[in-house]
Image (cartoon, rainbow, N blue to C red):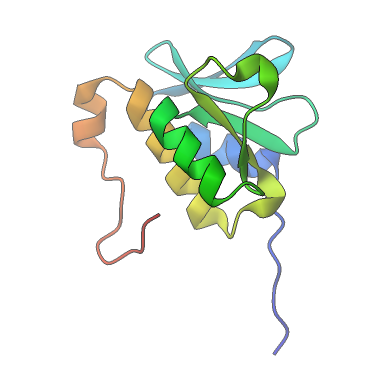
Length: 126
């Protein structure tokens, strides 16, 4: 049996981000950004090889140390609570969704987070 390789791209980021409750797409800095309740939780820089999500700085340091081929921060974003994710390094669409949901939860109002089931029972996380 042939192995099917899924190429994850910026359209997958857009599709999954827009599937999250009350998410809107808005262009800013000449790139698509995705927001919930007016707060940005994903941006897709113009080369579309990566995307940026909210990430507390202490977690960001651990992510980058654990998987530097996947997570990184450009120098001009070092002071922010955001991390970049290389699309080509993602394992699958499930991992992309988990990352986007995590960022969405950091921006969304509590009422939305409580109403939105983030994981399917028995699904692997992480």
